[in-house]
Image 1 (cartoon, rainbow, N blue to C red):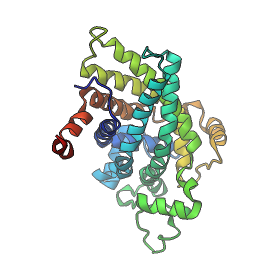
Image 2 (cartoon, helix red, strand yellow):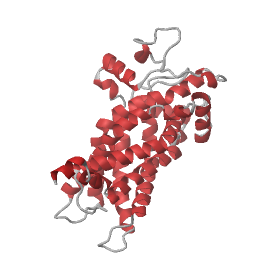
Image 3 (cartoon, rainbow, N blue to C red):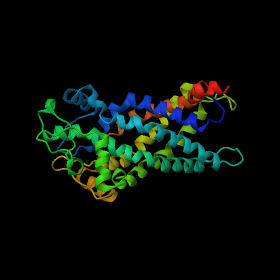
Image 4 (tube, one colour):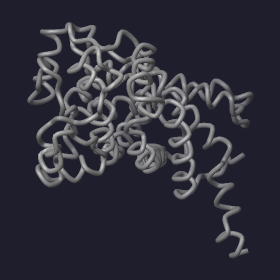
Length: 328
């Protein structure tokens, strides 16, 4: 168990393990969240999270629930490491003479962490959403034939260079990334950056102070840390609370980053236009689409991350690595 200051390599390992384990466990729920958020009134393919997952397995197979997971598994390590390490960095520099932080300073530290992580989060979400939503679009365009759906991203930006055969081929994250870079440059991968900042900065502002205060409630005494299960519960509760609080921003981000549209679906020119059209055509309740799914995704992710920190998994791996053993 590690109570000493955690090194940057250990933070990378802790964040990476937590992210990989968490993504593997909850990615199907995240896929359901994306598809539910992108549904419009009168064009609903899925009634609920369970209905979405059942139809996805029937039409796309078991691994259809993990479409886009490779992007997350590749980038979740730097994303989680940046978020957690940046929060620690800002908390350290905002503290006065080692004293505890005020709530305002805790929120400022979380704000800084959220601003840092969007460098990785935005392109990761951009690529993931295209792959996650392809099945919904295919099913919506071909109702009644979900069992024979072939997943493609029909947006001309993404298909002009390789969708020339009579039977289009499914696309990969690498193909989408190359096409976006070729046609739009680096800004293509950072589409929806403003909405991502709108989501991730408030999330971190809520999450980190709330976790710190919940975690302190589990301490047996001022000198003793809380038990590991309390760190998990505090991380899960703080994460799910923050996730639901910023869900309206997540809906806007998902809509803006979805390049492919089914017939009759709205297109948006920016954050303000997206908010206005959702309010006009779907009402305020549309901003809560997928909120339950998002809470179920975020809770274990951040609960596991805090347990990794508490148990000192990263430090243990570093201390017992071949290079460390050779140096001793």
